[in-house]
Image 1 (spheres, one colour):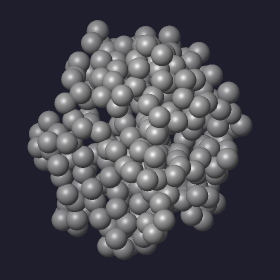
Image 2 (cartoon, helix red, strand yellow):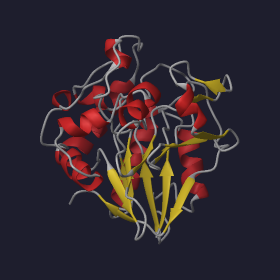
Image 3 (cartoon, one colour):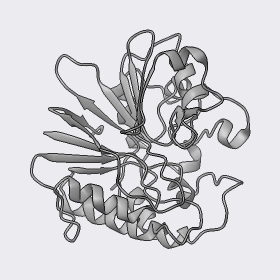
Length: 282
C-alpha cells in the first residue's frame, strides 16, 4: 500500500483540496483511491485571523475524509487543534474565528476519530514514528514508553480518555525555557527534539510537521539550530523538506511546508512511501 503524508495545512483549503486531488481522491465524496493511505500530521486549522484562510472548510473536509475511507485517512492533532480541546493557547495568537471548528475537533477527540501518533512498519527497516511536532526523549520517558510501538499505543490511548491539558508539556514556545521533555504538539524541532536524542539515539525514525530546521522564507537555518545538526541535515528547498541523520543513524524528516497566513498553491510534492503497514495502537 502507498502511504502519503501531508504536512501542516493551516487553513489552506485550496492546498488541501489540491493535494487530495493530486492523490486521485474525490473532493466531493472524500473517497481516496484503492491502495492509498493518507496521514495528515495535524494543524489542519490555523489559529490566526486571515481572510485568505478557511479553517472551518479544512476541518469539514478532513471530517469527510475520515468518514469516507474506513481508516485509510488518518488525522493527527497539532497545537492549533488542541486549544479547541482545552489545551494551551499561545499568548501571541490573536483572536480568530476558529471557534466555528470546535464542534468538529471536539468530535474527533470524544469519538476517537483522530489520533496523536502512528508508526509505519516495513520488514528489514526501522520503525518510523509520526507525530505532529516529534517525540522528545524526555516526553517518551514521561509517558513510560519503551519503543515507537509502545509510544503510539500510549499516546493514542489518551484520545477521548484524558483531558488534553493533562498530557501537554509545551516547552520553550510557551514557557520561554528549553525543555527536552516538551510534548508532541509544541516541541521545537532543533533545540528540543533533535538535541534530546542526539547523544542517546531513539532506535526509530521520525516524521513530523509543526516546524522545520530551515526557514524557507529566509533560506537559512533557524537561529537555535546548532552546527552539528546542520552538518547532518539534507535540505531540499524545491520540495520543502529536510532530513537529519543522527549519529546513531536514526533519521528525522520534517514535512512542514511553512504555508503561513497568505494563500498558497500546492507547489511542493507530497512524501509518498511504498509498502508500509501502519500501527495505531489498536
